[in-house]
Image (cartoon, rainbow, N blue to C red; front, side):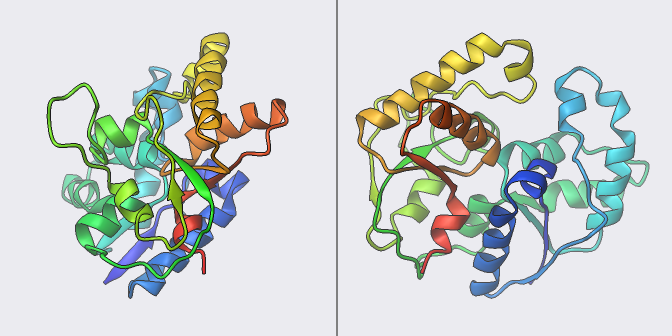
Length: 243
């Protein structure tokens, strides 16, 4: 199974350890992982700001970088969803193949590799933040307002980790307030929403907040640091890579 590692630009710049952990977990599970070096931003910031027509250059780079792979896997639900829904190119056949083959990390583990056992140990109390893009766009977990059987792909994987104690949040699918450019244009609202999410985790006595989208975790980490909180943030790939 030939897998291309899709590393969002903010992960590359600020959290390279997340990309490394993602690659190592995939390799442990038997995948041949390659990192196309010419990849760049998926174009989501422009689209979020109403300038999707200006992301043509990003689309060309994505198509050139990821053509021909069996799967493309990235540790960011929002960036993966953007490619799934907004990748356009004059070579529509290749673009359609990429849109159908790109997966968020936990989605790939549960739906494609169908992982049942993970050799990982993390003896800490952990709170799971379920990001909006992952939950409502990629359907990584059930939305609480729906009358349906609950599920969570990230939670399913965390239950496989030895020693990990998963906290039960009061409002487990509430938005953290990051929202890409929303946190820039609505700074006060975004910060208050983030503080509410942090407070929920604090009430449950967690040591670590994890999730499948490092952008949301980056937002929460900024609030935690400003509050001088001892709570850390870690991408779920880092926890699943723990020995």
